[in-house]
Length: 226
Image 1 (cartoon, rainbow, N blue to C red):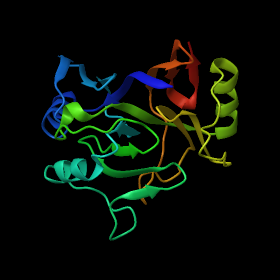
Image 2 (cartoon, rainbow, N blue to C red):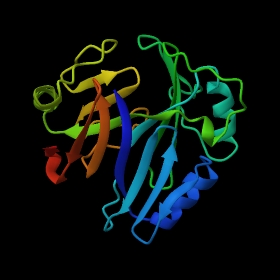
Image 3 (cartoon, rainbow, N blue to C red):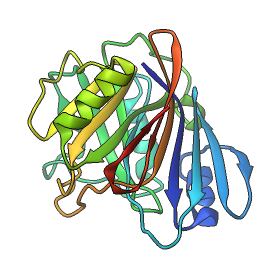
């Protein structure tokens, strides 16, 4: 699975453009008073203005698997990186054969840079914003994770990620190149201890088994399956 377009909300479009330009080194594709879009590798990332909702999302960017430490230093020069378990700031997901680190954007979204060692994406180019491969994960919040999982299976055929067993309140769907992280409402977003997961409007264009599909998450944890 690949996430081709991800649309989210932001309370402040101008500051969002500045952050993604200056901190992540992403060029603006389009911007007006209500929308800003960036190209993040193969993914088009768009923020639409919200009305003081203070939306918070959790999403991940894939980086070349030989560039995680270089990416860490590159980001650390521009913004604070979160602790995972002090004093460590890099998480080792040995079951996934991946490592990652986390930081906030200007909206207090939790951004993850992740290197997946099962993929053949190493590069010798110095790391910068153009090195980011894609948006590879987006957190989806629901009242009942198992029901949401069943709904996505019935509509799209999405199955649990082979490296992550299903848990009652945490299910991962997709493949190593693109994942939907299903979590129960009011769960702490990893690695924070105080950022509770809540559902906000989200729209995703993704490719799965050779077909492009759209998922729109509406208010109240309801999905609009397109």
